[in-house]
Image 1 (spheres, helix red, strand yellow):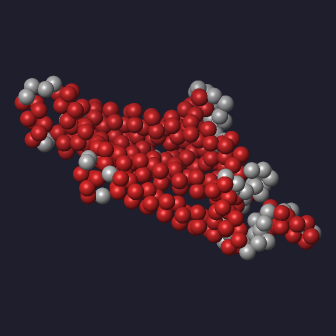
Image 2 (cartoon, rainbow, N blue to C red; image 1 turned 135 degrees about the vertical axis):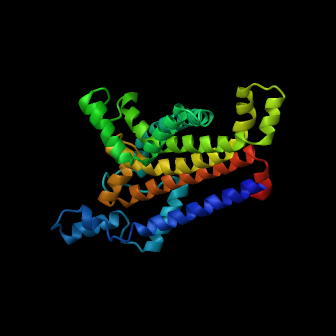
Image 3 (cartoon, rainbow, N blue to C red; image 1 turned 135 degrees about the horizontal axis):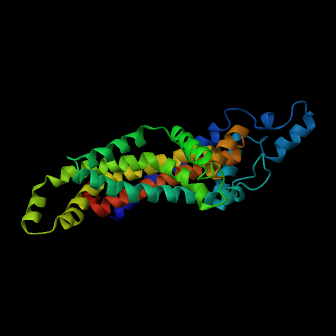
Length: 306
């Protein structure tokens, strides 16, 4: 198990190193940020002073070295647009993103697994068909389309929910549903299919022959063996959910990390953009590592074959 954990951790660190290098140099491809931030016609001396103030006159290798050492010391620079610490800016936005992400994740798993079980156990009647039809629509509908439809219905027509902001938990209800929809639909589909595969196995017939109640056969025997593909899709969808957060937060203006990254991209605010992408990549890598460890916990054979 220790060898498995060591290899996965080293692989995750290598991925993060590649991301740091790629993001730093990719953000410099569009040229000097001061060319876009300063007003037209500004005198050369003022522009040179601003460039020097933010260290943009230094060689790229030296800028990169300072940035990497800053990552380890917690100093990732000053926002070119807001003129204050990047860490402080993200500290203000992080709670909203964590709240939105947590709501969406809990909603997806808490509804997706039971609905998938229900769809498998009712595969020959209308209930199972209805669940799968709704899941298909939820997966096929783009996030921005679902967001616009929900805003039109629940905010503009019914006036039940706010369309933007972060003042109360109600402000996070629609964004959470929109963010959770694709993941919920995939969990339903994979739970149903995995459970159907397991339900036809001989060992379940043996469990039933021993007189175990059906609910215990499902919970104790079937679900455990159907869990690996479900955990797989949850891990993959969590990574996708991180990316979708950018769009959802921008649409609903929840003042999280996602819309901050969008704004930094538009403003060519290198320090804010770099740290945002690295933060998102780190979250995806950590989720992937946790999923790998869950594999080992659910199926001991993974420890040997990994």
